[in-house]
Each structure stands twice: as C-alpha cells, then as structure tokens.
Length: 324
Image (tube, rainbow, N blue to C red; front, side):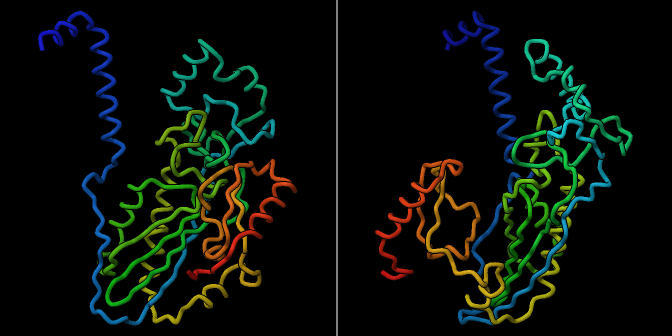
C-alpha cells in the first residue's frame, strides 16, 4: 500500500490523468445505460386458458415523413449533396474544435468551402443551419426533398387475453430508450402486454441516432422535433391497431397473397456478398426455404464467374424444404 502511495506522489500528473480517464469511462458507461436504468421487460405472458382461442388482429399506420418546410432550406451550390460551410451547422464547442484542429491540420479547407456556393435560409432565426440530416452513406448531408413517404406501421395480436403489438418503422435505427418512452406513453386501458419495435435500417431517411448529423455528428445533433413526431406516430399506430382488433382467419397463403411479390415465385437461392453472415431484413418471408450462399466477393466485383460458381454450388445441394 505504501508503494502505491509513493507512486502516486512521484507521478502526480500520470495519476491525475489516470483518474480522469477512469471517471470518463465510468460516466460514459453510466450514460450508455440510458435514462431507464432499472427498466425490465417480462417476456413470459400467460394466457387465460390452455386451449387455442380466437386470434384477433388489428393494423394501423402513421405517416412519419418530415415536413421540410418546417426546417431550414438550403442551396447545394456545387451539387455534391453536402453542406460545405461547417461553421453554419456547428454548435459552439464544435466551432472551437474545428478551429483547433484546423490550426494543426486540415479538418476542412475553409477557403474552398466558401467557394462552394452553398447557402441556407435561417427559417427559425437562430443563426444556425437546422435542416433534416440524412442518415447513411456519409455524414453532413441535408435533405433536399422527399422521394417516398415514410411510415410507422403497427400490427396487433390478441389471443387468450394476451395482447402483443409489433411496430415497424421506416428508419435507419432508433435507440432503445426511445422505444421504452413510447411503451410508457401508450394508453394503459388498452391492456397491451408488450410492444416490439423494428427499424428497417433504411438509408436515405432522417438521422434518428446522431451518427450522420452535421459536420461533427454527435448523439444530440439530430432533430429531436422529428424524433417526437416518430414517437407520437408509433404510439398512435399501436393504439389504433389494438382498438381495431377483430377475429382473423389468417394462414401462409393469405400472407403470401398480400405481399408485393405475390405474383413472383419465392427465390430458390440467396447469394450474400462481402462475407456478411446476415440477410439484413431482405425478403424474410420469401426466403424461408431458400438456399443461402455466402461469398467473400464484394458486390461490385460479382461477375459471371462468381454467379456460375454459385449456381454450381446450388446444384450440388440436396433440398429438403423443412424435411429431415
């Protein structure tokens, strides 16, 4: 113990920074747990009886397309889909960081940025560029317009007194504390046992995680106004789906007949490039009996030889379609 104290006395600076790093790690670990630190989900739901009851199903959806007129509009002077004037979109500490980094290196070529022709209209008069930032394929990309509407879709199931709702969101991803907040906001009189959420991991949608917003993306830099819209839409869709519950006669054929691919045969072979060991939400219903082939070849490099090799591998397989 005395040797440890002696080390601390001799190395005060090292000890100070060591303690500081430890405090930062503990603080970040504490924050990463989120605001609902003691929140738990009970996945064991007991029905009212042992015999199968009448399955009830309800569906609903809400539009979560952002109204770009409520955000700052901009002109992409050099048509590179990025906003090249970092100080316009940066917060106070980000401006300081950019200046410091630029002093020692080149975070951004400010002279070149000024010639980009980029500009914006300060709709809310706060002196800062506040657009809808687009997620995926690089940061610092403000939305220019809307190609397709975005939705939060809910489907509710009730059987033997147990009610479960699944909500699918046209989003790249949302942190779990937002989902917990939605669950807590739902009308308790509807007696919903559990609400599950899934994001479609769509790129080219509003950033809801802070990983792509502005010149220096941070978890707090995305639009909380838009996030409130998404949470409200998910809540309303879940509640409406439960209120619209009715007996349903549903089977595999009914589901298949209502898919966009209803007139297309299910695929026999799914080729996953780049060595990824996942299907990324692709045709989950249709590929239930498809053969999977994982290749390390990247998609841009996938050509006829790789396709023929995949078909030869497929021809060698014995398909059992769920049999043993």
